[in-house]
Each structure stands twice: as C-alpha cells, then as structure tokens.
Image (cartoon, rainbow, N blue to C red; front, side, top):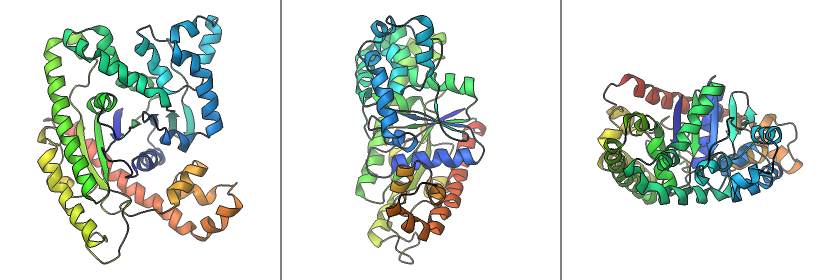
Length: 371
C-alpha cells in the first residue's frame, strides 16, 4: 500500500477535484483505492456522499465526538459493535486516541463509491484532533506512548484498512494549511504531489511547503534518536517524498505558448521547476530525475480548465467522464451535458495519462535505494 496526499499551501487550485479524479482513475486502472477526507471543509466527501446521508452520519456520531467513552457506555456491546461497523467519519475513528482511551477492535465500514473505490468521510470537527496534536507534540521528545500514537494514528489507520481490505493506494485530501494536522499528515504519508495554478501564489505556496518540510524533517530527525526502536516502527521508514507538481485548472490559449497558456501564465509555469529545485530539499525529491522535475505530472493532459465540468461531477457524484451516462440528469443540465458529452468523455484518457505518469514516479520510490 502507498499512502499519498495531494497538497498545496494555496487554496483554489482544484486540489480536491484532482484528488477525487486521481482516485477514480487509479480504480479504473484496476487498483483498489481508499479516499480519506482529512480536509475539514469535506469537499471530497461530497463527491461520494449526498448531504442528507452525511448529516445522518454526523448526527449519529455527535455524542462520541463530545465524549467517546461516556457515549460508548450507553451501548450494549453488541449494539456498539453494530454501530461502530457502520459508516463513520475519520474524526470518529481518530476520537479514541484524541480522548486517550482504547480503540474499538474493529474498523468502521468504508462507503463504497464505485468499483475498487471507497471513502472514509470527513467532519468539520477535525480541528479538535489538530489541537490535540499540538498539545501532545512535546511528549514525543520524551517518548510518551500517547503522544506517539496521536502523531502516527492517521498512518496507523491507513495501514489497518490496507491490511484488512487489500488497498493498493490510500489517497488523503488535506486543507491548504501548514498547521499541526497537515504537518503530521504530510510528514507521515509516503508521497505527495502539488497541483499549481500558474501564478505568483503557487510559486510562493511551493516556497512555503519547502520551508515547512525542512522544519518538519528536523523535528522528526530530532525525535527518532530519542525513542525506542519499537516506538520508531510506528513511523514511516523514511520521511515523505515529493512526487512532483502538475499545472491544473489553467485557462487554455491555443498556440500562444508551448504550454498553450497566456504569456504571463506561461512565465509563471516556467518558473515552477526552478522554484522546486530551490525550495524542495533534494532529500525528499532525489528519486525524481531532471525530466520529472522539469515537467508537470501528465504534462498537458490535465493542465487546462474544465470550466463547469467538475461541478457537474460533484453534483452527480461520478468522475467527469461518466457524467453523460448518469440516468437521472436534471432537465436544466441534460441538454448541455449531452451536447458536450465528447468533451466530458475525453477527460478519461487525460486522467489516465496523468495517473500513469504519477505511478511511474511512485514506482521509483520502490527501486531507488537512496530514498
């Protein structure tokens, strides 16, 4: 199993749209995939679950989010086991560690989104777990078991799901923050990629990510020698690897520049590889060759804007290329979608090329002995 995140310090770059379609493309390539929504905004969740069903899950969990142990005691063992095995959010699963109590023996059942594709939904209350990470961080330097479990629990949950259900990939969606929660997520996944809009903000986003990675790696490098080998095993074998960037959701200007971008956008896009070299430490990108650093993942395949296509994908909870095949298209959407179905369906090949290029980069994590 590989644990992967799509991350950018800049919002509005299509991060969740890319995360969802990457997961769908992997699933259609025959990989078994689980999506974890760790962005409190829960946009990835809405791709896989209607709002009424999500509200019902949240409502059922409310008592556990307030006080897991006290609410657990109101259930008979068999009733709790049934409740716990049903669809639950990622915060519910993290809550026992947040409260410092024992975890249930079984994991909740993921939501089946499509063939080979499952989802653990998000919850707006995740800031509570982030607060607990910050509160317990100092305990890492003393090897406190609860502090270590708090920092490694997201990876541990992913590994348990992978072991039980044989997932090939677990894809994590995150907020644009550089706070404690994303520090833990990004530092303990196997790899991350950065979707960029070709503008100044994305360049500074890469700078901020690179600087944060240096600080985070120093923290973990300080912590590892202070804890026992057994406790060290709860962390990844190595610090996270940078898988590359992709230019995403940019307006297309055919023939204007080599990347079919407006000149100003092209100039910013041209600066991204050097910004990566300057700010993303070679230690976390040494598995990438020069060609992989110089070029977006998938080259131009998913580079240009989809206009309203992602909103239709989210509305009907299918990838863009499957929207024309939905049986219950609303009358206001149907004519427009059917009239442009070739455009919708062409995105399938584009995401396939993008995903295959990403897999090529991920495979180098397994073959490069230096990483």
